[in-house]
Length: 400
Image (tube, rainbow, N blue to C red; front, side, top):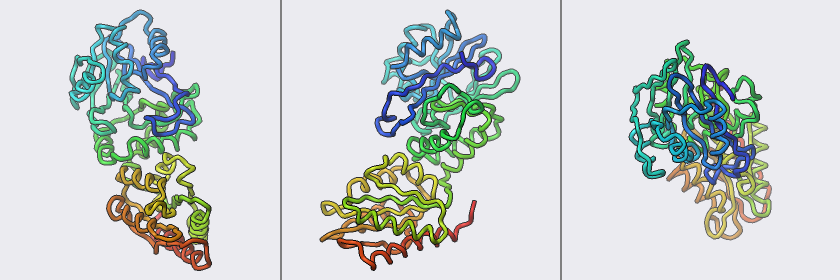
């Protein structure tokens, strides 16, 4: 059994087989489904796991409890990777009381035809004996029913069970708490998780952070990824920064290319930006790199340059998809340059401008480059000018 802190046990599982989270986001290193058990005068389970792992889950519960019953099950988030074992848990522990909010219970009825037991609101409490629970509703982080559970023991140690907030992609390779893990890989995966899953909801995240302000938090126990202990302040600062759409100085250059001509434009733009003082430059072929990683880096850096060929009298498909994904995230505080190519009818450059005018609303930088057919000396100069314009714009901004 794994004790996180005083009588709080980790009973989560790893999924190293799923290829894509929510059927969308790649999981090269798997993902964990975290659940926690508080053993006191009353026993309280915090969230469950994906139903495919129910046997492992039950084994872990029995390792901690033996034949002792579970009194309460708190549901912080109803997404099936956390609530999927709910109906089976109810069969094994028929007297368990399910704790959630009004929206939780509505979803629970729809998903599993189960009724809730104890309805809570922000400020509601539940006494377990040596541990006291207080509930904070955090709607749209990232579903409408999401909430957090604050647990304080008699020694004053505070653990926040945060649902998907502060989560990360990546299975847990033995260690559970950040202090016992090499966290380097998890830092970027936490940002990717935020940008992919939570990124659209910056305002609700800010509201949730305000509700946590003033708490001395010793542990953050998310439903995915490591338990935050030594790095509580860092992950909260990361969420504050990401939800305000604050970024580092740098450029993400994304391009689509069929025969390499548009890619040559991207290379010239990148080289020019580098020569003009930008160190952080990342480049992605939108047909090769999963957009999950592009979204992550757009949340990290304040400059974005996109380019693609005209295709079927419109914009190259994968670029069109990427711009739709970016628009869906409601990203703010970014600068945008763009370029394109065509053989007989120019459409790509105009389509990118249309995306920005109608949906993205990023600040335009430089003069768009529209290349006809093959690469030329004139095109090279225009691409260099676009890279320099973006660099000059970013260099006027104060460093963090």
